[in-house]
Length: 180
Length: 180
Image (cartoon, rainbow over all chains, first blue to last red; front, top):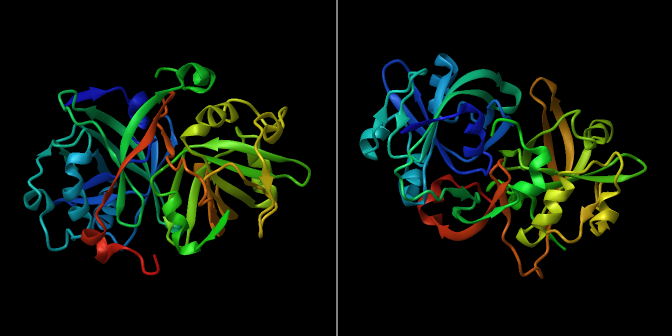
């Protein structure tokens, strides 16, 4: 995995892909599947929706860090299965044959098989709305990976795969952040 | 436009499409382009990131309502242009030849040309993080529309068009909300 400039990390999330979020509770690592995410700032800052109903939430609250890992379409069945079992009784890294890779800043592991990984610190929890606010502190992409298409959950059990990419850079030049 | 069950409205947003958000300040209607959105609950509740830097924010704060309109790929150039000019000096409905349609609950207009529209009430503003929390109160889709592919902003001036749709309903059955 190659390190990515932090100023570009929000571009991994802005399109709204399904992501995997890893945590480490001091003893074990866990993974949850998440579709309810949002960019809050270019720096980057992200919001995710989670709460007591996710086993990972306790570790997130306690250690205040996680990794957002971005899978691609070839991993969809694993992603769905990760989202339909619980870390309470399952070692998801072992069960789904995913490789934890130590990050540089946080104790939650990167996922080697993913297209990209973002190490994050929890900067706030808005409990009223189940929103966890995350600051990205290191980001990585795997340039050797051939499959780069992410998937977007519709919410009804279907998923939309990335299609064509359209370029509107010129038209948007005045609104793009500096340093991209 | 045909009314859509509110219990299905979150499925219009979960994949993370670029959306148009309309507001009405008592005199004029305005439109902003937004990519930083998230589902917060199935009921539906949504979060959007906005603040003083958007002309629409004043109307959103004052009247506490808006419409989330979902455009498709054939509208991309308009969507980008709407996002690169300001309602402070532009009547965007006139300039971009979009048709405002009265909603049933809120004063902000639906956009006739869009694939779907969701009337929303502001339920909270988390000012610390520039998050506006919206409750969907009525939703509509245009079943006659042939182009149904939405677009997803990457954040660097490029946009990903919806590709294939993959069905994992059976695998996800245990986790889908009732009433879908």
